Length: 256
Image (cartoon, rainbow, N blue to C red; front, side, top):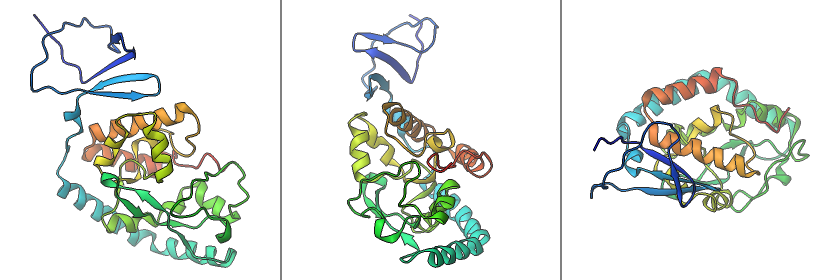
């Protein structure tokens, strides 16, 4: 019997397994070495080959890639970082940085560096905070709004990359409370933590950044993150970096 192999099947109901293609499907007995994961996102069920989540290129190669481009970026942007730090200090009292804990590789927590964009006394608790920003959030300073609009508040995370806690490209690091919300919608959410979190990612350059209040926003963020983990490679990372810098897709939707 002629068979076809597909990495992902879509099923809207437990008894309704179908492919997202009109080609003929011939079934054959599942070989003993094949494993499938049932991925549930909202009301959508996916059967996923977990072998697709194996390393696509050596860790050492990606680390060299990260170090090279991070050192290059820090060299070029160092004057910008100094100017931003000075303006933050002049505009409002408090630290230049806001350092919340975020979930990293293998769910380990790490201090995620950001430029402070809110009045110091109104910043969310860096350890247990769970208050998201809203449109015209009064906690955000005038200069902070500018930084968030162009994601410049994330630039200090280049130092997280140097320290090995993050990568230039990968799923964005989430706070623990938000991670728990995502796990409620996707049984395999933690597959995104098989890799280091990134300064930018596939979800972000495709418009799924910022708020995740709706079910669709959560589903799309997870789907794009897991797609990246499954398909990551050198050229995809280069594409994401290019789109981040020149694509204009990283403006904060909460900052008009």
